[in-house]
Image (spheres, rainbow, N blue to C red):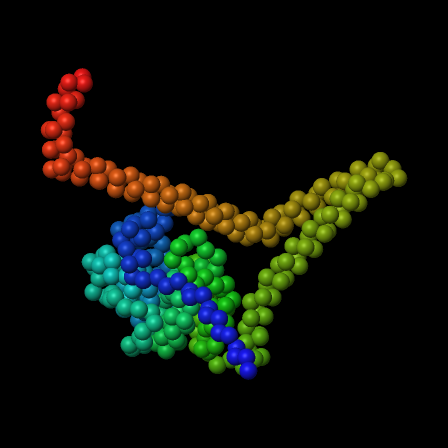
Length: 336
């Protein structure tokens, strides 16, 4: 009897704390600068995020899972929230600002979380974790709170530590398995375009469908109105460009169209403004990634050059080099 042959699955790469050294945070974002509270860009960004979290969710306690150097924790504390955080990277925790360091600890997101919190935040963390560990992290977060502010970039495959990148819909499905659903009344794009506030809820199918349909209907109506405006505009232009019996009739229609065109174009511009902004943001992200990749190559070349220069200096300072110079000096003078 033939036995089924077991084919081992390819192991997913795993990152470790050593992958998130001080160098990682130094070059975290070429535009924003070093990932630290002292950097104005990051301090202002997370203070703004903290303002929106307090305004939308009004937490008194918060936990940041994968807090890195604790910038969000520090921003929440500045806004009156009793916030804590932990991260797998010892370098990250030791590099935190002194004012917040006692609120941070080294720990893994796969471990059970002690206590409960009004809100748990997890910002760009789980894509760095092996899939099974990411599921453990979701379990741990959902056991410690009823509200999770979550974000995980759905399409950044260039970052070397992104070993578990998934579409936003997939993360939402995994949270739904634990009874957590999107808060459609909270716009969480203040953190990232793909960020979501998940909240524990016991929703009947009807309530769940109603909640998501309520969010989809405005977007669907916007698309319909935009298409209607474009079709109306195209028909009017076709009408003007068609044959006319008399020049005067043609001129009259053309004048009417030109008057209406301004209103139609203004309406179309208003409807498509959001699309243009999204397109520009996407271009900016792409250019930033290309710039970071180029800068990383330059850093690697500089590091390699520095290493070679260090080797050369050590060679010149070595006893063997000095002895060799002394032995060959008379010979070189003779050649001169």
